[in-house]
Length: 242
Image 1 (cartoon, rainbow, N blue to C red):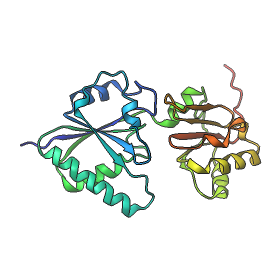
Image 2: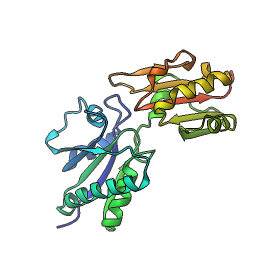
Image 3: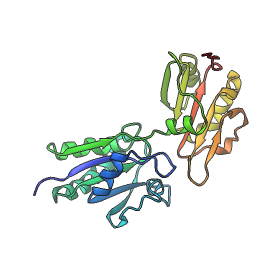
Image 4: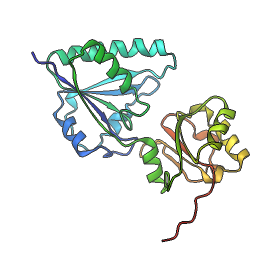
């Protein structure tokens, strides 16, 4: 039987409906749909992002994904998951794998795709671009993400705040992802640098527990957690006149 096709689809960072039309059409046609769920969560956020789309949920397969920083553990986990998907693909089934945000931006999909290509070199794949968390944050807060020739750095939050200070000082804008428990330290740094009022933060956009803050000098340190993004501006926006 002909090998099935792997389809990578980003379903938006929270609000239902943030999925491209072409991706939704491919999702409706897929034989099997894998929805990742964090091991620390009881609910798949990807499933929540599909609310109201009237999809056939009998095709859904919910699987846990690791957030382990250990590369060896990640490799083993996604190797085992790839074997599971490979078995489905070998039956001729077209398999969709959903991610939060964009499938190619800090996504678990990349690990899975690499493992599957090693197992099935002839595998045909199609990956649809999705809405990133920082694009959704910028839109939700009407916060322009780059104007003119401003330089933007997309960065997973470092443990060392002095390293973050250097990054802020050498770029106009910082998109800070994977913040987690480091939020109090990040806020302390931004207040120390005197730029907290220029920075924005969002968590769980469009989902229960949503936090939207256009001035992080007013943000509680309790707002940290999964699905959080911060937009850092080093200097105030220039006034631009038509």
